[in-house]
Length: 421
Ligand SMILES: Cc1cc2nc3c(=O)[nH]c(=O)nc-3n(C[C@H](O)[C@H](O)[C@H](O)COP(=O)(O)OP(=O)(O)OC[C@H]3O[C@@H](n4cnc5c(N)ncnc54)[C@H](O)[C@@H]3O)c2cc1C
Image (cartoon, rainbow, N blue to C red):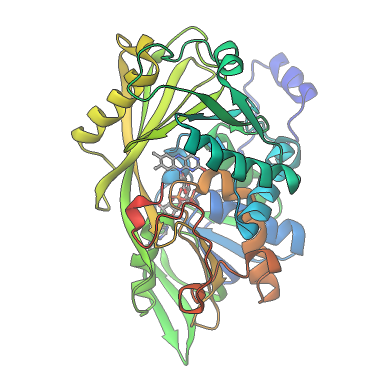
């Protein structure tokens, strides 16, 4: 496999860019693997990569019912940040951000990670107090964090509605190392790097049933035949409950909801940062892509569904929020909008854990935040599968945390999955 470099671009330029090889193979599924990961989204691909890279394991397959990166991996608004306060979350997301900072080099693939700052707008003294608590804890524990007054914010982000907003803007909480990345480049980068380490990535291979014997999974029935496996990891995001049911298990503490994203026609440079607005029932986040499109999103569609398209009231809701903080978007045309299926957990936190089935491991419950988490998620899930015990950082990301009363609900929204944005 060619290593990408300035030299390889130059060399292929001499032959009209016609001699690039495939980025990854398209193998036929083998009859048996040591480890099978179901789901070629970011979490599944990252897990396969770290299993091979960090643990030297071979004979691994990733099974994907569609094409790799065609789920939420290719549908999100790509915000990467680590502005968490609760102990476990802080360590986990900061580890993820550190992996992001070197990911293009690690994978030899430009994931276009742009550390352009994440700016959460503040609208009241109470919001500033809450932000001060969270951002000061971040600073004390080694994560970058800043609080901006109104004058600084106006200088850095001049186009916001500072004059007649329904909720006047009073300042901002900022993480400068946060930013965005190109979502499908991340999926392609992990896929290519995992493939180079010998992982079989098998697309158009839907898992349709699970064969269990004596408390273990023996094989997966797929649309491309039966595949035996010694260890199995589920990383299917919004489809987690479906696969869980196939494995003959009770309900997961997860609901599947739809989340939409939007992109406008391309504009000249308007917004250099990621801006987040959340007050009085509004929830809105926006950044500008390298092609100039304004990329934004809001809340869930408020009802459970497996459809990958959204409904119009949320389009209206999100556009209202957009206009209320960036009125200059008023005459910009919307180019596209789409939806993904979110695996919303009861406390807004993920599961990276063993399951009641001895050789089945679960990676799920990413809510709206699974893009930024994907490097660390793959890292720790691989560690769990390889060593058959959770790393201390993810010990609380277990299915037992509800019965043990372990509180990692960062948002404090309580046991209503749709409130965990
Ligand atoms: C609109 C939107 C905006 C978002 N914005 C952000 C953001 O700004 N920042 C952030 O951090 N997160 C964001 N997220 C969340 C993030 O995208 C997800 O949490 C994350 O992508 C989920 O992990 P994944 O990539 O592994 O999932 P997916 O890409 O969904 O991967 C799961 C894969 O499993 C496959 N699969 C399912 N069932 C089967 C089966 N039976 N057999 C084989 N394969 C199967 C699916 O086809 C899919 O490819 C957003 C999500 C959406 C939808």
